[in-house]
Length: 300
Image 1 (cartoon, rainbow, N blue to C red):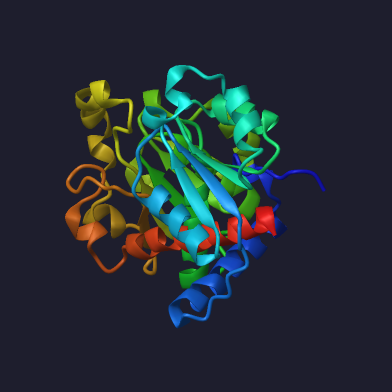
Image 2 (cartoon, rainbow, N blue to C red):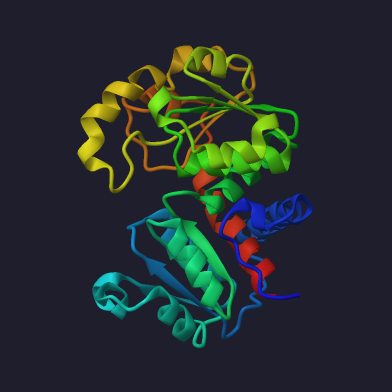
């Protein structure tokens, strides 16, 4: 089999994703019991960050260390990446020196071009279009707490952004109903929606989306690079805040997720994110273990 990349969830099959999630649970147990057996001796992960991060950087660096390998942090400020070297040339060179490349960037097309010219697997650590690594952690978290997500109702509240796009991918692959509540002018791209139309409901009514939902998810209203739109976005998204009243409409055992960082009082109220239905801290921690499983899948 040729090189496998992970640019969106659709790069893996349902069986592969389910096996990866189960492996992540095993790796998490080994981490907690301190019984891990490193199998990445000499393996190197190159990490390109054009967008800053806490969870992505720490989770990938820690993952490689726990697997017995090493991660190299690369930013435009201290490499040729910031001086105009073509993406194709960077891919050709870097993939001769490392075993895998993780990229956190703006344009998704840059990831696609990099992967086309890379001799090693490329992982999407986040782009403006998708955030598949976060979905691995989210799906692992739901599986651990509630079991199979197939047939469940998931409510997405807020911007039809990269996280929403990856939830759309997940709805089709894992077989759950995704109800997206967002303002008309902030809906996800039709090109993404059309591929999963049978699993998606679009509404501008957050209450309808939350009704009997098994999982409620949101994200910040203003992402990196959108700061100039902050005031306009705050006004548009205010009715879509996940708060106690909205959570009360969900199923009795519903859980709340957020990819973090969160802005309490904006997209989510403090009593929800810090409340008993919130699983955001477990969700964040699972980035480490789901990404270890992903790295194993791509490299072992």
